[in-house]
Amino acid sequence: MRRTFSSLVQAFLLLLTLSLALAFAAEAQASALWLAAVTLAAALKTRIVLARYLGLDAAPGALAGFFAATFLVLALVAGSILVFPTPIHQARGNAHLVATTGAPGANE
Image 1: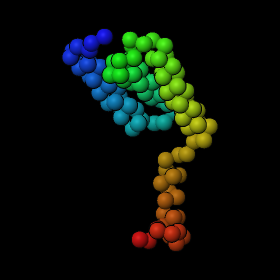
Image 2 (image 1 turned 60 degrees about the vertical axis):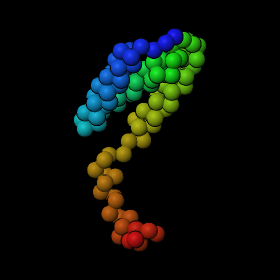
Image 3 (image 1 turned 30 degrees about the horizontal axis):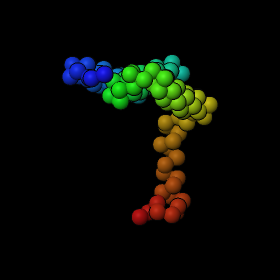
Image 4 (image 1 turned 90 degrees about the vertical axis):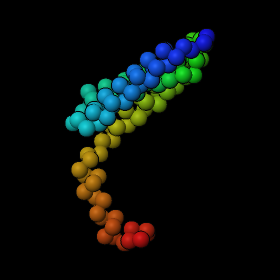
């Protein structure tokens, strides 16, 4: 199936819009709802790239398999974020400990 220029431009604009939405979501307060929204937006971006840019809409079985694999990875990452949360202020607050403890390469 041959891609038309307009369908690729539409896909690009949709990917750009989703990327902007993800950028704004990253600045928002972290919560399980935001994490779900970001994960679903990333999954939608994955499906667009697989279907339109790689042409897998012509092979539905391959599209389903690749999308399932990438969605599984996204779900594992999102689940690990929920199970092992690290507050941003805590991670930034501990950064000075590495520089003051004489860790290798800290003072270079």
